[in-house]
Length: 415
Image (cartoon, rainbow, N blue to C red; front, side):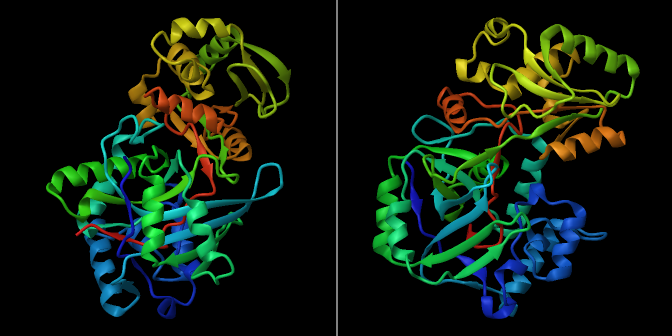
């Protein structure tokens, strides 16, 4: 049973900062150093100052805590006395060029252990980010960035009538062109209706696995009952028409020895058939285990797994949905089978990096930053759900849900 509740939100006072767009930011894990600096040049009160803290010669987490307290005392941030949930619409251009709108409800969700009928992950996590987020949570005692979760029941029809024709509390135009609109809903009847609609829902974490595992660790560390037993989530129905997934491409950065490149070429030729030379985008290709491959010698080709039946032996204990995952096939056949990389190597990103676009991936190969790039297809939502329902987790970065949920709309107090 999902326990969904309103929160006594801490949020920016729009009268103090002028525009939420100047202080909101994407999630911490997709922000580069130059992007962080640019955001703070726009406003010294940008949320990255506390959610992605830096401190020259000092403790960044103490800096985040001190800055947060200073912003509260100076009126940059204000704490609501009355509980609320927050409605978010995200208008964006989809991969096919059409305009889409994705809806989400921001609320508190009771932290549960993973399991059927409760909350499920869909990707493996990495140790470094979990420790970073735990240190930040200990220092600030707030959830600063919402976890994005998909729900098997949809509460948006309960919320939509309350915001229809109403002016948004704030708008944020993201750097990716997404127009985010936010409404605060204080009506307790709507709160109860949302909780009731979702109390039998199963939640699937889409973005924020590290943050959720941090929430579990923090709950156990503090112990007992209290605000720390809940975490901030943005909840979207699995059938929401705006739900969109992009692929995340793989860069191989540890092949500086020419012998390793030769080994990769031989292994790929043995396991895959080349279905097109000079092409690299596999998005329209049908079949099992299809990729684009760019190598440092300038070659480009589309690949398809030669023997899909071999996956039964490679994944003897995994579900059919998992066996057909492009990311899992690449990890098992190429990263592990050809290059000898372990699951730990993948999770620690030893010799491995990621790219969000084909252009970014090929540029890394052309510049010498990477020696090879594998271009992936997007994972269908149905396959994500099927793998999670089987109790399995995908390789890291198997999905890239778009757009991201902005950080800086609301913060959830944990004490």
